[in-house]
Image (cartoon, rainbow, N blue to C red; front, side, top):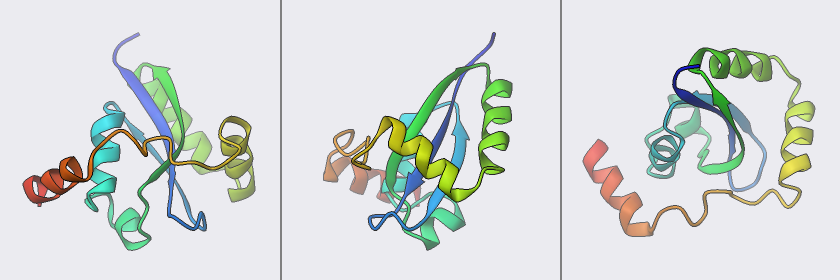
Length: 109
């Protein structure tokens, strides 16, 4: 089976943009987004809030799932998010303290 992978959707505070990603370390990836150190796209649109994620056995399976999700219409993605997270809450809101986010920002720059 191999390594565990995660596909995920992140969004901005106003929920106007949704971004699909894949990683083998979800916690670390979300910390980077919250520290403003995600992809160029994520940084440009202030994407910091984890809306949805799937834990998948095997990184190749996770990558294939990400490719599938990236082809979906925006509405389909939001419908998937709402099926698991109807209030559109940041699922990682309490994963890190403000200090941890600041330290990550300072360390990873």
